[in-house]
Amino acid sequence: QVQLVESGGGLVQPGGSLRLSCVVSGSIIVINAMNWYHQAPGKERELVAGITHSGSTTYADSVKGRFTISRDNAKNTVYLQMNSLKPEDTSVYYCNAAGVITATGLLEVWGQGTLVTVSS
Image (cartoon, rainbow, N blue to C red):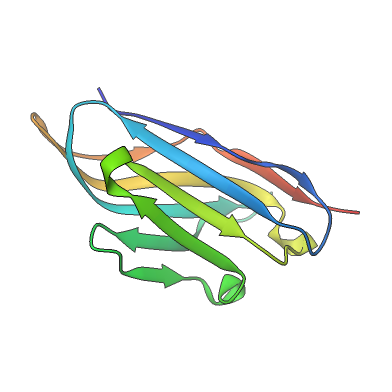
């Protein structure tokens, strides 16, 4: 069984920073892609940033230059450093592990979400 646990959300003032972490545990051989999505109330879930096993990254236009995604393959952990936060970044952030290769097959796993609130 593969589990995914996120941490690091909270309340921050505009212009502030937060760092989200996501740890994937279980009988994992390799995780191909690790991603962060967000979903604001009444909106669809959208990709914020993604990183491949080799370290290639992609970002939503709205966060380029402000957010940085990184991962530690040895720890099956992905991070999202969020700087210069804006009120419109307020959302529930979800960690996603795609192409998780285990002894029994290929999986996609989602976290439970962590709330980020940007407000003064």
